[in-house]
Image (cartoon, rainbow, N blue to C red; front, side):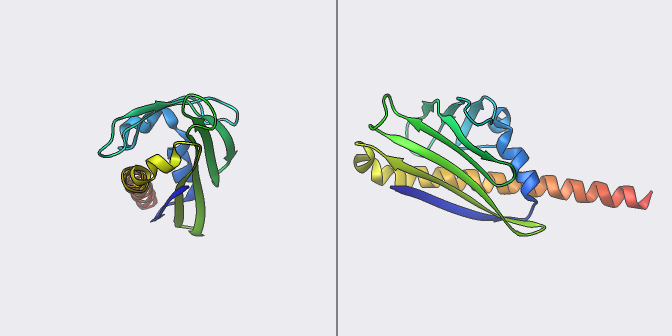
Length: 157
């Protein structure tokens, strides 16, 4: 089963990437993955506190399985033991132009409990993804606006 969302962000892939890979700063902007600790480095285990809307918060300790600079970040986690409820969380950045990026945010779920949780995943978890996407968009676009304003000020002087 897959939960899939996407959003267009008027910013650069580099700006968005820097926000996404600054895991220890998620608590300052992310309404879904409210606390993340660790380093976004392939092979590392990170610690995540997730708060899906309308559901009980949960903690996971997934492993970073892919990190492709300014392009893709993936981690994979499990509930208790592999095969019960596993999730591969994926962020993909696709540049539409030099000032616009399509941000794809999805998770692929496998395991025995997935069918029992399908409704919650399609509703609550997807809503959490969308809240995170919007917060990322606002943060990246505000950083871009600040950078453009600073550049404009510097050009005047």
